[in-house]
Amino acid sequence: MDPFRNMGEWKQNMDHFFGESFWGEFEDVLKPPVPQVNLYQFDNELLCYVNLPGVKDLEKVDVFVDYATLELRGVIDIQHHGGQVIKDEIIQGSFERKLELPYPVRKDKITATYQQGLLVLQLHRLVTESQSKNKLTIQNLEEQ
Image (cartoon, rainbow, N blue to C red; front, side):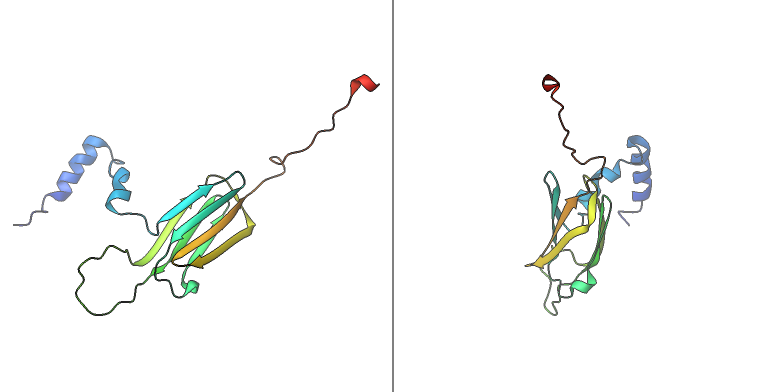
C-alpha cells in the first residue's frame, strides 16, 4: 500500500480551499533558498554576504547585477568520498537564485570578494540626475 497514493488529490483539494498561491508561502520552509544570503542596506550602499562553502574554483560562480536584480549561479561541491553519511545538512549541487534589490545599483562600481566561504558583494546605489541633490543659490532680496 502506497501512503502517498492520494497526495496529488489532497494537494488539489488544499489548493481549491486555500488558493493556488497557498503553497508558495511555505516554499522557503520546505526548500530553503540556496545559497543563503544576508543583505544590509545603507543610504547609498548595499552589502551582500553569500554563503558559498567549499567553492574552490570561483570561475564556476556567476554573479550578475542588472539594475535592481542580483542573480547568482554556480555549484556548491563539498568533495568528500567514502564513509556512511550520518548527517547531510549542507545543501550541495547546482544553484540559481534571483534577488530583487531595494533600489537600483550602479554597474560600474561593484566589488566582489571571497574569503572563508563567504562571497561579499558591495553594491552602490544608482543616483540618476533626477535624484541627485542640487544646491540651490539663494537670492537675498533684502540686499536689492
